[in-house]
Amino acid sequence: MPQSLQSLSHLIADKVVRRVLPSDRPLKLWTRRGDGRPCNGCEKPITTMEIEHALGLSGDLILRLHIACEDFWRSATGNEVPGPQLPSPRRVAGEKRDGLPI
Image (cartoon, rainbow, N blue to C red; front, top):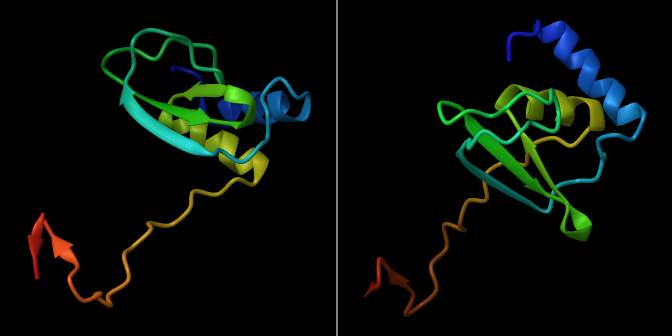
């Protein structure tokens, strides 16, 4: 991804405006090592030395993005990363932790 960050930001924002990239809120997010498939944002391969972010959108659409490209896509679409879902500190009687009763 040798492009400047500013030009990358403009490229992705332009793709969102032209509806080349969807702006739907992701339903799921997976991360894994890249396998050489192109990034939907910058169109450059996501190599095995990089992390691929796969965003599951409605209609079985999956966006594959570099980490920086995902950040610019989220900024252009207003789809902020949700905070961590932390469990409630309250315990229910009989609840198990690590498979053992507490």
